[in-house]
Amino acid sequence: MTANADTVEAPCPLLVVVSGPSGVGKDATLKRMQARGAPFHFLVTTTTRPRRPTEVEGVDYHFITPDEFQARLARGEFLEHANVYGNWYGNSRRDIETALAQGTDVIMRIDVQGAATLRARVEGAVFIFLTASLHELETRLRARKTETEQALQRRLNTAAQEIPERVKFDYCLNNQDSHLDKTVDDIIAIIRAEKLRTHPRRIRFKD
Image 1 (cartoon, rainbow, N blue to C red):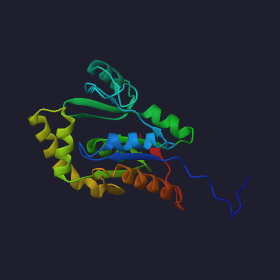
Image 2 (image 1 turned 90 degrees about the vertical axis):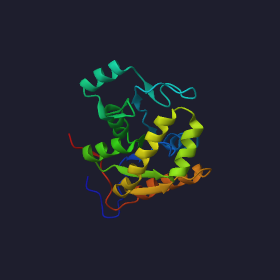
Image 3 (image 1 turned 180 degrees about the vertical axis):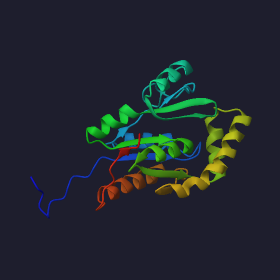
Image 4 (image 1 turned 135 degrees about the horizontal axis):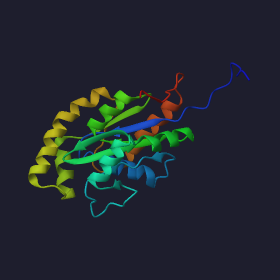
C-alpha cells in the first residue's frame, strides 16, 4: 500500500553513543537515565577490568577474563573493542542489532577511542560528547579512589588529548558537577529532536 502525502512514518530506532574522557560521568549519566525510566535499551559493555565494589555484574558491565574476551573477539562477537589503560572493552553487535530490530532505541557509553571505531563502522548513529574541565575530571577521579597516582595522571593526560575530539561529535554537553539531571534532560531532548528529523537517521553497519 502506498502511503499518502499526509502520512508521517514512525521514526527509526536510534543508536546513541555517549562518550567522553575518563571521569566525565558517562556511567553516572546513563544510570540516572535508567533511574528516571528512560525507555531505551542500555547496552552493557563487556570488560576484563576488575569489578569495583559498587558495580554489579550484568548491570554496570559484563566482567570476564582476558582469555574469554579473546575467545569472543576471535568469534567476531564485538562490534568494536579496545584496550584502555591495560584492560579490554567490547560491545556486542548482536545485542545492538536485536534491540534495533525490535524498534528500541539503543544507548551506550564508550570511551573516545571506541567512539572513533564505531564512527568508522556504523552509519546513522548519534554521537554525544560529554566534557568537563580538567580540574573537575581530576576531582572526580580522585574521589573514586580506584587508581594509583601514576594511573590517575595518565588518565588526565589522555583526557587533555581527548577533549579536542569533541568537534567530531554531533553534540557536546558540559557535564557539570551536581547538574546530572540537566545532562540527562539534554540527551533526552537530543533524542526527541532526532525523532523529528525530516530525513531520519537509519542505522547501517558497514561490514
